[in-house]
Every structure is written in C-alpha cells, then in structure tokens.
Image (cartoon, rainbow, N blue to C red; front, side, top):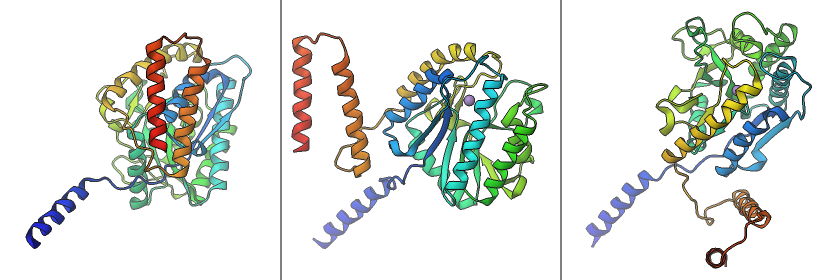
Length: 323
Ligand SMILES: [Mn+2]
C-alpha cells in the first residue's frame, strides 16, 4: 500500500509541476487620448475589457476635442505628445518604487499580455532594469535608426533615475519639439537621444544612469503582423508614412480589426470559473456581464422564441452556479 501511495504522491507532484505559477498583480496602465483618437481608443479600451483587466488599474487622461488642424506633426499632435510626457513625469513622482505601463492608444492588447507582463516585470527585477520598450521597426531610413526604441509602449520603474530622465525628455521637447528634418520627431527624438543606445550592450545605460532594454520583436505586432500572431502581447497600429492623422486612422481601423481577428484565432481566451476569483476580479466579471445585459436590453432586436428560451436557460445556469 505504501508503494501505491508513494506512486500516487509522485504522480501528484508531477502534475503540480505543470500548473503555472499564480498570476501576479497586473500593473497599472497609463494612457493619454483625445477625441481624434476615439475610434482607435475604442480598440485599446475594449481589448483590455475583453481580458478582464481590472478597471482600477486603467488610467486614461482624455484631452477631449483638440483645436485643428489635426494630424501628423501639427501643433495639436505635439500638444497631445507633450501631455503624455507630463503625465509620465507626474506618475513617476507620485508612485515611487512602483512599476507601471505607459502606452499610446493606437495599441490593442491580446491574451498573452496578461502573463507576458509578469515575465517582463520579473526580468526587470532580476536585471535591475528601469525601463523596457518596444523596438522601433520603421521602414523610413531604418539603417540610420539602429537601436531606436518606439515611445508608444514602455514598462517603467518609478525611481529618481527615471524621474530625472523623463523630466529631461519633457524639457528638451518643450524647448525644441523637433517636427521637421528626418524622423524621429518630437518625444521619440529626445527619448532616444537620452537613451544613448550602444550596439550590443545589455543592459543599455542612458542619461542619469537609466538601465533599459527592449522586449523581443515576436512579443509585439508592429503595423501588420508577420509571424507574431501566435506570440504577441499587443499590436501597435503604427503608420509613420501617412502624414495626415485622419488618413492614418482611416487606414488603421480595418487593419486593427483584421489583426485582432487573426490573433483571436491563435490566442483563444481561457474562460475562468467565478470561484477562483478575488473580490475585485469578481466585480470586474459582474460589470462585464452587466454591460452585456445592458447591451441586450438596449438593442432594438425582436427576440424569437428559441432565442428567449436559450437566454432563459443561460440565466438559469448562472443562477444555479451562484446559489
Ligand atoms: Mn502610436
């Protein structure tokens, strides 16, 4: 009997090894958006909702309607970028010793985002990194832009090095908002100057001693995906060659949608039971259900009897589970 019991224990141990570590706390996300970005922002927001991202971790600064003209390298475009920098600086100042994610709103997130952000965080802690970025993958004179990072997605540690660093980026941007000549422009220009990339170094070390690195290309989709559909945590709908924001956004919506559809086929959402959820997660789930029910109520659709029957059965099922 002892042998049998021992074998049983061994089997249990073996199984336990495959159970992933408990998911850590997800990080707060900071983003600045405006009315012009309404459509792309809806992808940003809904992608986080779909993942059940806790609402209290999502911090959006909405600048509302900005004065025209709108578009790439206009004053209103630059104004929104400067506000992003200001928000980053004040977030760092208000959350010392914590980590957060800062993103553009022309980004959408996928299921891998939930566990990859834990891996990135672990990596940053192990290597003492202050910041990680996505790599700039532009096709506009790429040979002159080796080592450049993209300002649209980064994970940051709030400390005195990063505070000095981002304050300096903001000051330089305000003094010289580079909007002509060769790209990169505005914040991306100043950010990369401050980062002082050196070929092959790890970690990289920039102004004020900030230690930084880039996340692997296969973990993010740049524009249209090549091989990253299976492995990407997010999609940045960049299109630096289109000079009018309006045009850019018009092209960007169908592209964003098609990337979302492609990724969803490869990264199905895993349904989680309600029982293993924390209070906050449970509240999130309830909000999502309530949203869905409100959507059904608001729809003008006439339900046919078989729909009604199916809805009743689902409601009954939920009620049975909860009681
Ligand atoms: Mn962007």
